[in-house]
Image 1 (cartoon, one colour):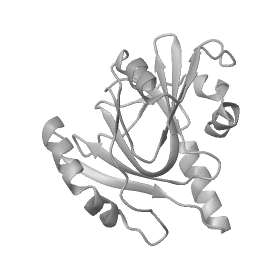
Image 2 (cartoon, rainbow, N blue to C red):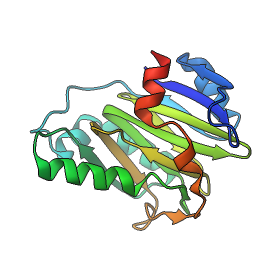
Image 3 (cartoon, one colour):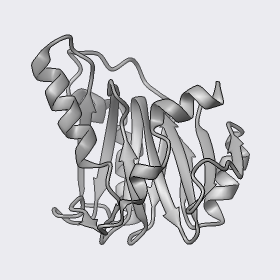
Length: 192
């Protein structure tokens, strides 16, 4: 189930809001211009599941969203656990690539078909940690300062939507704020 935890930007240990109530999460995010919606999940994502398989499962929803929001490019990012040293290095590199605050020139739209990941949205003087799980579709407005944690043992499959080919390229702020906030595994442990 989706989790939202809101903290002051200058006091990461202070929890202003922690909830798993989907309506409360959607309302809190909508007030900040962020949309959280849900699509039904369609089957498991396993080692043998390709990006094309995932896109085929959600073709109707993907096509409708692309038409409604002028999204031209769609791909699938997926990282499933393997018990190899090569995978652990690849997973650590992937995790580290997104743990610094950045923003994008276009909206960041992700649908989680499988697994878990956390978007940390730095909105004015608050940080909204949004733990997304299978079925969550999150739309973050262009220019929003944020970072993403896929956890110490990443397991997720997300459909990514773009307006332009370079839409995913991050503009890193250089602010070390992300290092002060609890990581995905800490958020989940605290939420029980």
